Length: 450
Picture 1 (cartoon, rainbow, N blue to C red):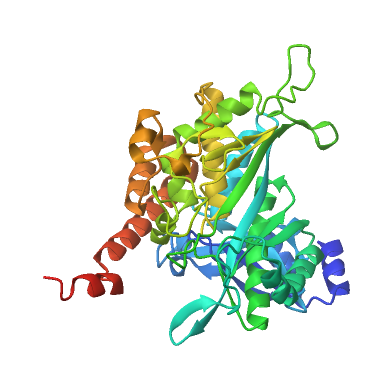
Picture 2 (picture 1 turned 90 degrees about the vertical axis):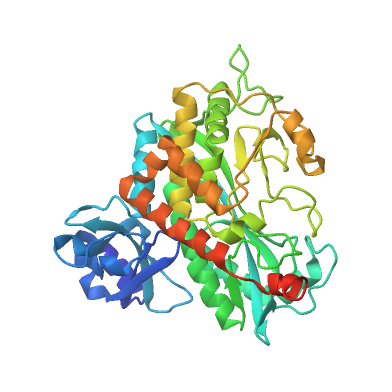
């Protein structure tokens, strides 16, 4: 503790941002003077439990207090907030790990892997929009970003270089290895890729990225948005996850998804080992329930649609399938890893990765078979053709996804009883409210139609 205090003091830090993540995947927290670092690490910063959505905590008694206990290894000065260092807090209630804290949920899942000497490595690819408001309407912040096919547009990239450079510099100063930044398929849409890290560090990094991007975009007069699909005729924002499983200690760790021949040499022509195939079989088997965690808003399902898209290639999977380098499938298999393409930018990273681990371990424990690989471009097939191939569909709205989660003991069990109950109740309420909302589209179509 003394060494950490000295390091932060030398960096000019006067306050700690004790940050935790709520059920919705939103960063919450408070400022604590650095002088109270020991308290943050041993007891935690206190919050009113019932004021945090999704805790289910009482308004009175010892279980009304939510303590965010800092993880010392996460303490990091924030370049965009001089004098402040973020420290990630784990939720504790009544001096016990709180079962409905999303980070504690992921730590439980990671511990199950550790029992097998396994570590999940994840490379995450968050997409986001830079927006502005004009006359009550949300628009891309760059009014000149108008190409019919804006993917990898260098002109828009150049115009946003001041923001992107500030973001890149800030993240690297926080220790994140930024691999690349690019303009994505929609107007005002960008993507950042990070280097692989273990699942818990990856989730922590994503929350740090969101904090930084929000603050830096505001400084540049823009709004940073991870809404899955803000524009009906533009592609939505995904958060693809590249996944591999490693065994052993750091110095001699090996990727157990890498396929080998009978003589022990690496099979460069194959994608995944038998264990890797079992893992993705679990992901496919539990895909409907996982979708509730990977696509947790009503807006998410404007992205995961089946059929022709008004914006060209949607890049979002609707079919429960896997295939070698197949970007139209839910699981895109690559040599020694796979890409899970269901998650969108609104997903809570702790919950979606905890669910992924539970599904993958179920596939390994029961030696599930993922079935034949799909090499078809699934975006070109009509529903009848998909049905002929025996390919199931992902839930097509949030209500279906929550029903699937409730019916799936494996994924629901990974969340724990309290969080699963609170999550399903909040999301059912969100879907019900959405279902009852009368939109401008409905008024324009039906007000004088009959």
